[in-house]
Image (cartoon, rainbow, N blue to C red; front, side, top):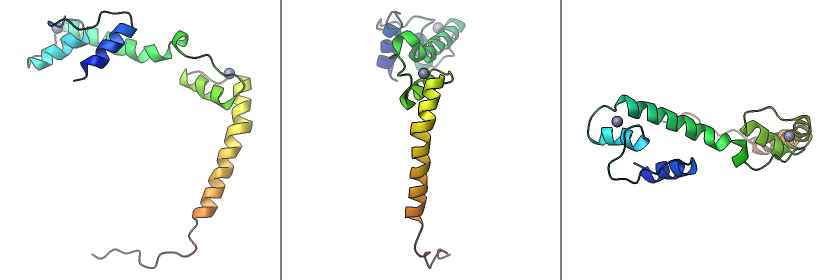
Length: 127
Ligand SMILES: [Zn+2]
Ligand SMILES: [Zn+2]
């Protein structure tokens, strides 16, 4: 389907892009080729695709590829969570003081604003 995105990821992982006409077994392209030919993927392709998916999942969370965390800000707290780690004290404190009370106040304001002045008269649809 989207072979270009496969290729981009393969390149970004330092692997060979699947530009060759004959997709090699053990690659996501090879896996797809089996399906295009209407056959079950071979073990090489099953293993290759699993490794590829694992690498792709892990790649965006590689700290060297992410911008450094803005510690001491609520954004920093989100950056910690994005890395699957608990926020440091500075980030947690910033998030608690800056972000959460604002959200709660906002929700209270919204609830008060959207409370209907009068309920709709006809709630039952015609059967
Ligand atoms: Zn194969
Ligand atoms: Zn932090």
